[in-house]
Image (cartoon, rainbow, N blue to C red):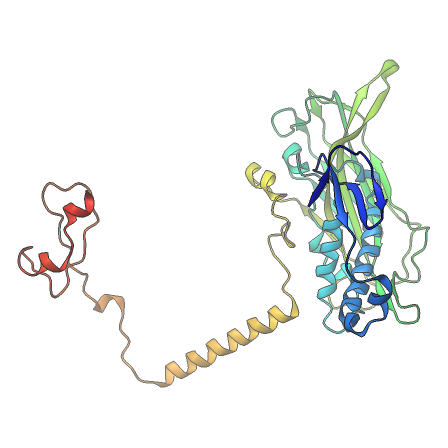
Length: 390
């Protein structure tokens, strides 16, 4: 990687590109290369990459809708999590074993566990600030949610940022549609009923002093006027803690880019139900150790929130083959009539004590050719312990 120090320019100059990169304090210089755009679009050698490009484009489009449905609390994030959302949706896309490569559907409503529990922050997570589980109710039938926040005490179960004097809770609810490939247009699209009328909504609590905490609070929100035409959608519930600064006349101003957020629940379509139905989720967040909370963000693999990773169809086939193979071996071993040697039939080996004067050493097992007295040929076959210690 080349850097530019004396000349401060950005942009394109001939065959070179000058740009800034996050985490690098210098200007990065890159030379243009690779195949041209027309060659990638029309060349037969790029037929397979074009299929993967089509699927990744669908994941990017759906990732945009996922981020839009958490827009009220999205500015609480301390990093750009777009790549993580796109990668999670790619895992969802791989679960479609019926579709062809390049046209596989992205049905988040069938794999909601990949986003449930997602933290919007890396430096300070929501679970490290609010250390008491939240109780929530999420209903697909009424498209409503309720979050019960327990009483919080400073430095007991609530550890806010010490630089801000006020805080409040915000809850966001949105509908995320599944994406499918449209063969007519040749692109990925959401459901036909999904229009610009589907927008996220949020509700917030009053401002509380950060030095004291807050009483028990309940926040309710609903999307009764947004009615999807089928079950191909996910109901995403996000909660966040926003900090504020007190001004004159008891007016509190929000502090930009300060706070924490988390996707606490995603309600998908019921398993095995193709007709319109309902799903009501009433749960309580599990209690997690502080060390697990702080280190959970570093483990950026899918299924990390629930502790499980969804296997791909190829992995499932390997597991089934291994199980069937082990079953055949077990049946063949049962047919053979061979004596079974258990651990109780094997006598415990005698151990020789270390020579006098030696310090703590692991005792060696006494073999058949060893001399019980420690004399004879055994001293010639085995290296001297005293020399090894020196």
